[in-house]
Amino acid sequence: MPNVLEVESLSVEFNINGTYHHAVRDVSFEIKPGETLGLVGESGCGKSVTSLALVRLLSKTARVQGNVLYQGRPLLQLTDKEIRHVRGNEISMIFQEPMTSLNPVYKIGAQISETLRLHTDLSPREAFAQSVAMLKKVGIPRPDEIMDEYPHQLSGGMRQRVMIAIAMACNPRLLIADEPTTALDVTIQAQILELMKQISYDFGTSILLITHDLGVVAEMCDRVAVMYAGQIVEHGTVDDIFFRPQHPYTRGLLNAIPRIDADSKQRLKPIEGNVPSLTRMPKGCRFSPRCPFVMDRCKTKSPPLLGVDDAHSSRCWLHETKEA
Image 1 (cartoon, one colour):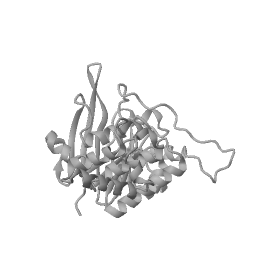
Image 2: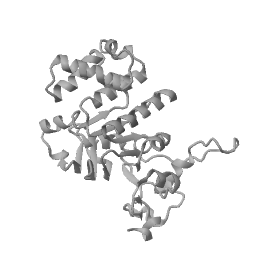
Image 3: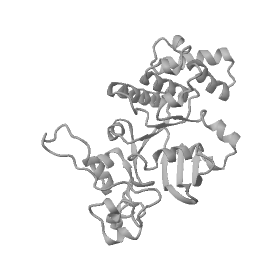
Image 4: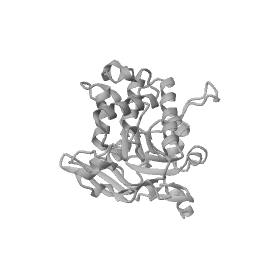
C-alpha cells in the first residue's frame, strides 16, 4: 500500500537578528497506513517544529523547504483553503498542553461540535450527538454532562481525552501527537497510550508520535526516528533502536535510562556537554563536540544517513563502509 505521509528533505529556518538559522535540516521519513512512527529527541531538537511544518502551522516568518506528500498531495504547495480542509479532517493534531490548546471560554461540546461542523455536513443536532459519541469512545464518563462544562472544570487526563476526541472526530487518516502524555501522572499516561493504540487499531489511523520518553516509544511505536539538533541521526525499527543502536547519541540516550535490574550503587551515564545553540551549530557532525568516538573528519564534514541494513540507518562516519 502507498505511504500515508512522505517527508523529503524538510528544512525549516527562522530569522534571528536578521540572519536565518536552521531549526530543522534535511529531515526525511515516511509513515505507512496504520503505522506508528516515533520522533524522539531531547527538548529543542526540532521535533515540534517538524510537526508544525507538516501541517503549515508555523508563523509566516519561518522559511520551509522540501516536500511533504500526504497520499500523494504536496501539502506545502496547497492553498490556504485547501490545507484548512486537510487539517482536522484528514490530518489531526494533539498538542502538548491541553489546558492551553482548548479554548477556556467555550464549553467542551462547542469545541468538539465546531470541528464536525467545519468538515462535515452535519446539522447542529447531529454534530452534538456525534460529539457525545466521541466522548464515550475516548472513555469519558457522563459525556452528556461534560459537553456542558469548561476546560478548567476537568482534570489533566480528562482534558487530554477531550483533545483526542476532537482530533478523532472526523476519523483522520493521520494523527500527529506532540508529547500527548506530558504533565500527566503515570497511571493516566498508561490510559492515554492504551487509548491511542486502540484508536489506531479500530480506525486504521497512522500516528506520528513526538516524544522525549523512550518508554513511550517502546510501548507505542513500530519505527523510530531519533533527532538531534534539527537532524535525524538514526532511523530504524523499535528493535533496531533499543537492541542494536548505532549512533553514539542514541546509545547515550539509552545509557541514561534508569534500569530496574541495575546495581543500586551504579551511577547513570549522562551525555557530556550541552545541546548546541541554534545560532552556533558546530561544523561537521552536530554531535561531534559531545561524541566519545569523534574523529577529525567529524569536525569538518557532516555525515549523511548511512545504511546499517535495509531498514536501519545512522548519521555517523563510523558506518561509512556499511552504506547500502
